[in-house]
Image 1 (tube, helix red, strand yellow):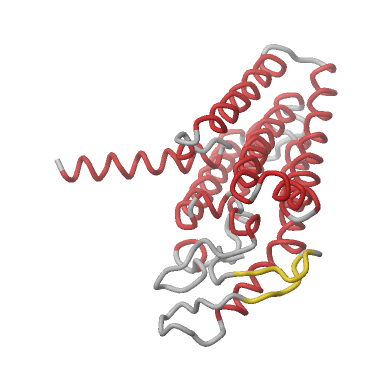
Image 2 (image 1 turned 90 degrees about the vertical axis):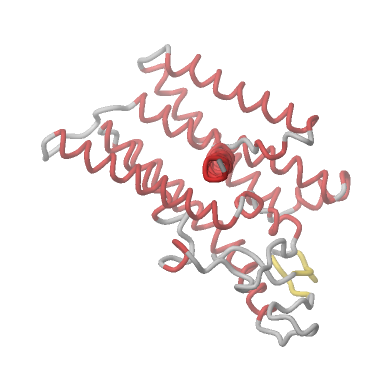
Length: 284
């Protein structure tokens, strides 16, 4: 029984991580008002996708798919990550709602953006299938594509399980302070982080390429490359300066006798002067 119970708990935790990566945090259900709105928006996005793209085809759906992908890119990278996480919108939300409520709504924004990034890639691939000749037998192509999808998902799930969904949803960057510290140090350095400093952005994006390859969609391959280049742009412009600041803080001598230092320092970050940072965050 203890083994069965432990296995069930691990599977439940893994399910929460996977669904969280798809844009809905089940561990936020206790905050029922925000969660109810979040879940309703999440389900509505799925319903609209199936109504528009699964039941229709032709040139009209292609134009809609292209517009959908462009809109998602603008909202995800231009609004949610750049403005709401690294710019003026974040400050306006905190000023109006307070830190915790502002972050609660930022989570909803980010979750819906994550879901729609997946859906717009699926929509574009469905609208533009079999767009290039394949020089290898189709079974080999499908095998390669399936391995890419499996590797990408597994790698990303592994990384997200180690960092936790709070880090996945950028809580540390939104609040501008550490939310993770343990005896192993301030940064995640185990699992896929031993191989790559940012596994979610590298190998963790292979599933987009693999899905496009399976259907022979060069438009899908281009969109996957655009999204990956954009997340690396976010990393270099916003995330890396934040993590470097955390590393600098962590390199200071401990002030309380512990292995992980606890001082707080101030530094300019992303145009937001005198930011107070703690000592823990995900590996970049």
